[in-house]
Length: 70
Ligand code: SF4
Image (cartoon, rainbow, N blue to C red; front, top):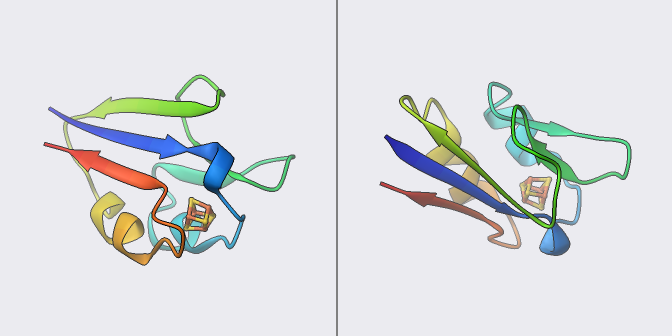
């Protein structure tokens, strides 16, 4: 299993993560990214068996607030 972490406080809502990895990321009502299926909070985490494009999303994030733990 791997873990996707998102520091929502740093997110500027550019939308890159949701465009690159819509399986796990979406922009929600406050204009920031949210990990689908995770509890909405300041730092979100989700354990996944398949990272899909989450690593590409982390690399593309302009403020580096997406982290992948393997
Ligand atoms: S790529 Fe980063 S800054 Fe842009 S919406 Fe996603 S988490 Fe926020």
